Length: 331
Image 1 (cartoon, one colour):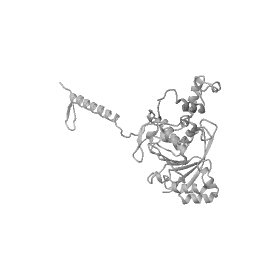
Image 2: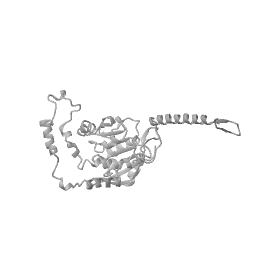
Image 3: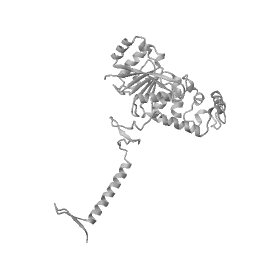
Image 4: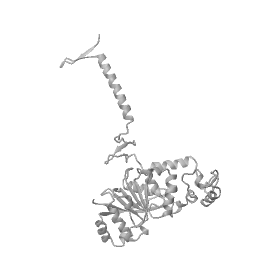
């Protein structure tokens, strides 16, 4: 005899087998529902401590800023110090040893020119298997010494600017004078494809960028828009883009004040209002030479506002940089 449960209000009778059948159907339904959700590409809400895509205001997907860490923490630094200590590493014992087959950059270049490496295809360049034949000077990374300070400083600049401007992968960034991408490589890797733009005047730097840095770092698919030009002409970047960050690292030092002001005038309308930032490193003599009050008036006429000076320390060597911050205070 089947047991039954009745409802005094409506007199509905539900047998136990019916309840078991309903529970089984529900379980199967939720199993397939969860399975379908696990393979869904839909944006999900952020979960604390877990890197999951969440929708931004534009409806695009990005990694939660809480999970997308840029700078190393104190714990990260202590961890690597512990690894050095636990492995018994002592730098002073290894200063003179440069590897199994030590070569200076000059010797490496000579070997490339004379021997083309250990194994290589014979015959003229057009018939070999090299997709992007690269000059030996770039292969030995001579261009990494073009800056008067270690190449590693590029990461310091990226960390400071990306965090100060609260960047996310879907942000748009413009660098004025990206050189051989000492800084730009880190932005290109972090940002979505086509979201890094640069105006650079030097042909040799651009050759190093396209023929060595982007291919060697696996960043060709990021399609950065890097344009050769000077005189602060940004017309090739189009009129539709609005930048979250525009920066110039020591570039304005080498420009006449008049050209700097012309560039700021052209860039003001391309900077995102309120949240967007312009950062200029080292000094703002283009501004201080005309006096503080006059500079403030001139900036205001462009819709720009000076927010202050920042000092940022290097992670790897005894060095700091001074940055000046501006924003666009109105649309």
